[in-house]
Image 1 (cartoon, rainbow, N blue to C red):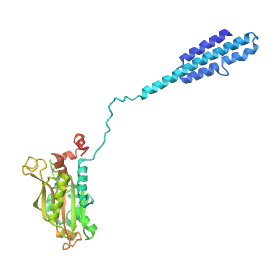
Image 2 (cartoon, protein in one colour; image 1 turned 45 degrees about the vertical axis):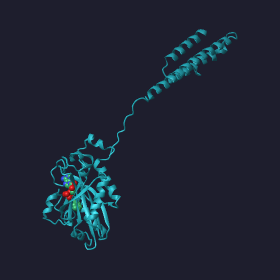
Image 3 (cartoon, rainbow, N blue to C red; image 1 turned 60 degrees about the vertical axis):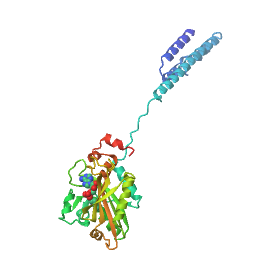
Image 4 (tube, protein in one colour; image 1 turned 90 degrees about the horizontal axis):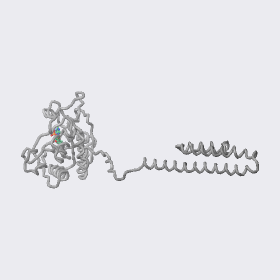
Length: 344
Ligand code: FA5
């Protein structure tokens, strides 16, 4: 009996040592110490032993059980510790590693410029209007005093969808649409940013698709000096307090008188450089007093109301503000270019 118990103890302990996980330990526990295990069997058979042998065998069986239990517990503890260590090793963080930079997108420089211009004009009481990019011949040309066959249409050739439907060549049709909405009652004070399209050849300063911001102010007694004051305020707020503007006579069929507006060259401060072609000035927009016929077609009485309008090129503003020498950079989505405007 003693030999059998010793052999059982040795066998169980060897298995415990070999076990590699908690599940295997539990199986050993059930197999050797469980109700149907060999040690329980020995204890059960004690009745058949002599009175002398009984306590000895009982003692021995208990010792074997205790020895196996102790070994099981030790191994169990070791496996648990190892599991915790493995988990800690797998989850450990090296706090000395540099952080991974989060890739944050940013607004396109043209969007940033549009928002800046909107801010400045909203500060002067203008609200922001919108109009469609696919426009009718009527709003793009006729309502702006550009009847069919008018030679000034040549300067703004478009992409035609049908004879009567085209991609708008400027944001000025929003003038006509806005006037209709106000049904002849002023004041009207809006700006309208948006995409426009022309059959222009692409070069460093021209693109077949670009952006404009239209401005329209109609009220009683609006004068040319109001136009000049508003544009001067805009230039100083957008480019800086030392900015000067210059009005040159020009022609647009929808304004009379008409002007081109130059700003003093941002690159050289007006001294003359390559960018301003040594003139000290750069053209950024067209403007003028709304033509009485355009007011009339829009439902406004030209004897009561007067107004001014302007249309500025967003890309030109952005190129001057940031010193960009080619308009095409805005559309090619070069990451190195765009990244420079993260904080713009
Ligand atoms: C017009 O488009 C007029 N509608 C502006 C206007 C509005 C005049 C209201 C009077 C009253 P112009 O064709 O000059 O005018 O264009 C205005 C501005 O758009 C230019 O000063 C320039 O900054 C920009 N621009 C014109 N063509 C291009 C082009 N192909 N690529 C990039 N910018 C352009």
